[in-house]
Amino acid sequence: MLDANDVIVRLKQLLGFKTDLELANLLNIKPNTLSSWKVRETLRYDKVIEVCKQYKIDLNELFLVHPNTVYKGALDDRIVKMISVDHQIEYFINSEKSLATSPVCIFPTEEEVSIGFQLGVENMHPTIKVSSYVLSMKIDVAAIKPWHIYVLVVENRGILCYRFKRMMESGELLFVSDNAAFESLTLQADEIREIFAIRAIFLPHVKNLVED
Image (cartoon, rainbow, N blue to C red; front, side, top):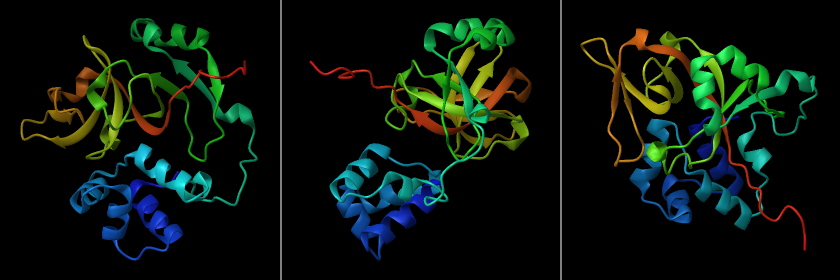
């Protein structure tokens, strides 16, 4: 998938807009809000998708790096282990055993993902809604980047989802929530057992699957 800045550029192109102000007005947000999206490399996907529906813009064309190609690799390479809120304690205690029995889904995304963690806390709202699965790939702590969102498996704390802000002078890593009601989090690197970079977000919708 494209990053937030590329999505903004492509959306303007698809709409025929020349300026960020035009796009901000259409999205019904302030121009400085759009600027903050660029800095933080994040989006309000609900607003973007609403505009796409209104103007009949293909989401594949907007979000995918190569929208005119179809993923032809083996589907086995896109199997994602899904860790629900109810099973996160099991994962925290014994990740290998938990993964062996976890349900799987196949997501034919352009980016490689291997595990999806369901969010049960509102600290990343409104960027990520509660009950969403964040589709992720495990990385090294040294690879984290400011303003990107990560899933953290933290000693004595459990599985958390936060946005990395910066490394403090003390050497601790500062993470923040997108919800102002929640406090920030400081961690030593050795407290982080695992860290996962979020590649996509999946919000299950189970209503109206069967017509009356």
